[in-house]
Length: 169
Image 1 (cartoon, one colour):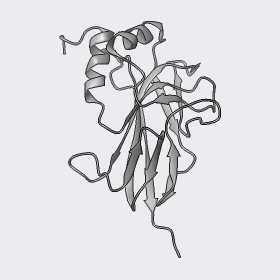
Image 2 (tube, rainbow, N blue to C red):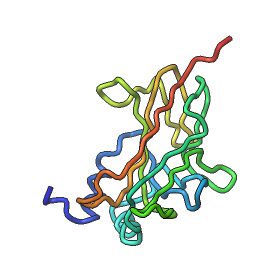
Image 3 (tube, helix red, strand yellow):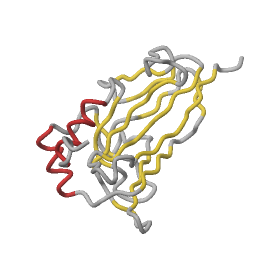
């Protein structure tokens, strides 16, 4: 798409595509540390500034504490302070495999098997309390995407599938 040549245009396109179950912020600052995610971290102006400072990302890797949740479990999605860090580890790497700290990213969750990509019954996002809660059995996907995609790196993302199960009595 010739229209979306600049990082700012790509960032704006990405911002428009994030569904209601999203988070923005920065990838893990060190290997094995939680990502610094917020409900909304960027505007079109601060997003461009973050992209200007970001090295080119080739790979993202998402890790979660468990790929199985029980109904009622909460996944701390957002960073508040050092006492409430995210459960999501999202690491960025360059094309030679070197770790890249704190690059701008977005993350979202959607259920599997739905045409509208969001089933509020499986996962509930409480942005004011900073967590994602498993509400009923099913599967959902957590994705992370580098916010500064250019025409040659548009597909820099990763995803992990999480299954929600009913607690056995």
